[in-house]
Length: 432
Image (cartoon, rainbow, N blue to C red; front, side, top):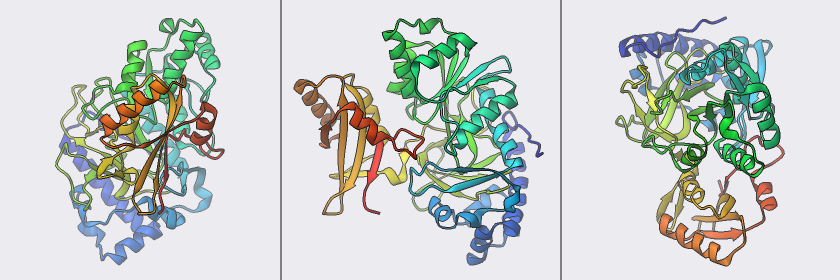
């Protein structure tokens, strides 16, 4: 089993030397084992022996989600009899792809999540309630479960939904930590208030918020984070990860960005032309995995926009940190000269108490430009409330999207599909 060396508190020189060594090992491994990267090196006349440091990565063209979609099995570096787990992406950015893991990769995944839980100051004495799916080939659910086990903490696999069962489990078992989508935490609180559950006296001390931002790019809590904190005085932590990179960026108790696990991944932030941006400037997160055996990635464009800081954190860790995700490059909406990302629209809609839930849909019109439609399920159908929301959206977005009021059942149907493991609040129906 591969052993790992926690670099969180090491100085920058130690981190860089470690990553340079691991990068050299990775390049030779890919040259020997990966059909995709061997072809990429050959096509671009890349001599891997000349790539000496992580700073030299700029000489290698990035790979993309589209590459994996087209050449999925060319990324595989082990015989199929060494694969012990098959996972897949959610298909948010197109057709889902298969990500295979070896036994060593599963160990790495467990280590990654145990590091994340360590940043939350969790110990073996904690009880972690996983309010998320552990089926449907969902890597994250498996990572949280195995990370809990490596930490030595007790784990409860309640799965998503069913507020009554969630609260019963919290009080009956003594849950100290919840892992859940933050919008569901709000529903849990609302359920507790409606049913006389004294949630403020529960044993829950902290929540790991997955799948949705709880912070603005200035690291302050956004509206959904504030809503939770104003109701329930628990510690909130944010995390970012993807199936492809098999690694998470998780906040520490200071809440100043997601810490990079430097022994597991090399991170870059690039502009539209593939050049590194200035520290603190927003660009696309590009990652190189370290220690992945079955399907390692080299300079992989995540499609997610953020900025990075290399300043040591006040928690004492010296690893780089990334900001909350601003949006996905492919989700950019251009509406009548205005540039929008879905999280901007979500934040505005989350501020309206009249709205029960929503779906934002973008499509192509006959002119080949974007049309934006916002489907709203209202807590009550009032012409005055609808006019207020329309005016509020226009004032906030500077454009007028089409607003459609539908029932909550119809909205839930739009948000979910049988094959999906995520609630979809953004639907991209534009022509390719």
